[in-house]
Length: 491
Image (cartoon, rainbow, N blue to C red):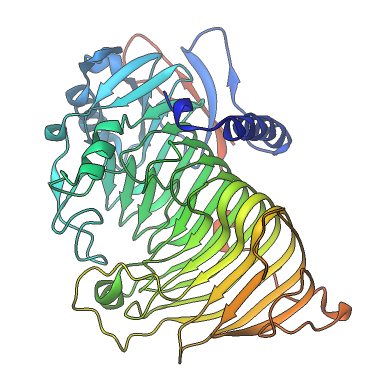
């Protein structure tokens, strides 16, 4: 995990701060706890479902020496365990070691568990990644036209999937991919680290993910998703190494994640231009809580720019942003169509930012030249409240689209301390309208102050979403001499 050479001294100090904050926050989160005994032959873990059958990767010839390929071992293990889909499900345990592997597909009613000293090393050989069709809501790959390399861990049309561990590591070993991207030598779009498609009841938790070739976690066309207690680290100089990208998903909960990235820490998406409009699957009912992010060249939470299927009912709270380009960013353009509406953010702390708030109506970057210039996005009911920011270059850059104003913007109880070399004009607003209350420095005329009696304005919903009812339980793993064991279930 050689990422430190990409950080300045200031950023290293910030990393130490984040890790300290991580320990503090995690120690106060009332989670289902992990309990370990003297060996990894028995332990307890937390999951949305417990499993009746288990196996270790070594049962299928896995070798954790860092150089032997384990692609066949992973696939053989999962193929064997898939027979238990309707018989209590199964878990594949990855013991301590360095496990080199190419892409492999997972199955339903299945748990992949990484020991704390297990490291999955993604193969750097392109032949270990099949080329698959572009996402239908995108119409092409993100890096190149045409297909894309399959993700390291991939699943489609699945139910009840858990990818977890005791903070084990998945290392994407992305440097050769990054080099080819910079040199324009890629034939297809880079693989993601984890991608789950057309699936429901998904948990991705308690792992460290580093150095993905591109995005780290990509649930797409899926529902009922928990992403919890992930540490995600990539060099801040590498583009498109987004942390978590929920894409055309319903009922997603992202909690207690710690992300350092060369791109958006979280990017909420739903398809690209005419392809996303035709596919028409929004991202909605998304909860983001207790996120810590460093993203010097991008956003802490981005909405778009691929938002043509729509984004609605996004709730983010208790966010810590450090040394990042922007706190909350809405990215869209003429031709995107779709909408971003009913967005609620509160309890955000920002330290050393270029922009606290950024809305962009001229993002560009089209899938092709066949987009509809009359497809204008609708941006409305955007609520920000109870925030503090310090050392900020510019408070807000809010740029709508001429003839297509961004409306219903509400900013309340926000204090922004500007940097010594801040822009002379702290706010720049065009083609937007809304209100403000208790905001310093005072925002532009397009967001007139409503007085102190409106400090409680800028709604944040009090009712919970269905994904909050998706709970984890305590499960236990007990390894015997054979790989078909029972796992006790503790509710």
